[in-house]
Length: 151
Image (cartoon, rainbow, N blue to C red; front, side):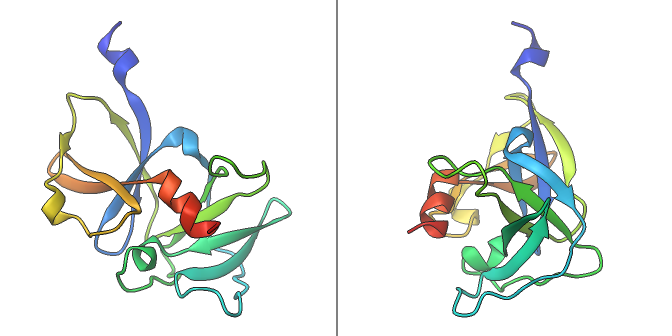
């Protein structure tokens, strides 16, 4: 197996004060913000629902989900639409608000280091942290996200 085969095509999603690193295969689309429809009685991190490909998709602030200040759409924001988490219907897409345009990352064992866990927010939504080229990024725990969305 060559070194190229060991690479995982990923996306760095800039948040306010931190970044997420997710496999590109988990992302359905990156799009511009659209009209946001609030969800009365929803948690603060649930920013609302947006229309995407004739579907209603929940938009969340990952920062708010991990106990930081809830982010709100800004002129530079993007919406990252994710495929449904395991165990959900094929149409149960969800989206995370990105502070700016996500950046592709080709990740391999040679390009990353595991981040010191004490430097990460204490949240079950974070599987681990990594450092790539001296930048710290969090890898979300998709099973924990499933539990947060569908308790």
